[in-house]
Image (cartoon, rainbow, N blue to C red; front, side, top):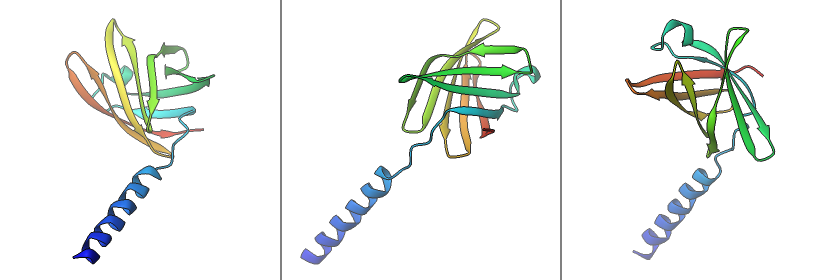
Amino acid sequence: MKTIKILMLVMLAASFTTVSAQKKVDPVGTWTYTADEAPYEYSTGDIVIEKDGKEYLVEIQLGEYYKIKGSSVTYEKNVLSFKVYIEGESVTIKATLEAEKFDGTASYSDGTIPVKGVKKK
C-alpha cells in the first residue's frame, strides 16, 4: 500500500512538472490570420503585436492601408486577448499561441467564429 502511495505522489509531481514547464511564447511579431466565417473583407489579414514596456499593443492590418487598433490587450499563459471595433461592433479576439501558430475565436453580438493563424516574422 505504501508503494502505491509513493508511486501516485511521483506521478502527481511529474504531471505538475509537465504543466509548469510549458514554454512561454513571445507574441511580438506579425501573425497572418484567417477567419473563414467572417465577412470577406475581414476574413484574412495580419495581426501585428508590439511590446511597449510591460504592455502589449495590437493592430489588425487589412490590406496595405486599413488598420484597426486593438484595446484591452492581455497576454497570460500564452493566451492573447484584445478587443477591436469593426463597423461600430465590438469584437473580442482570444487566441492561444504556440511557437509558430495560433488557434482562437472572434466573439461579437451574433456569435463566435474560429480564427487561426501563423507567425510571419
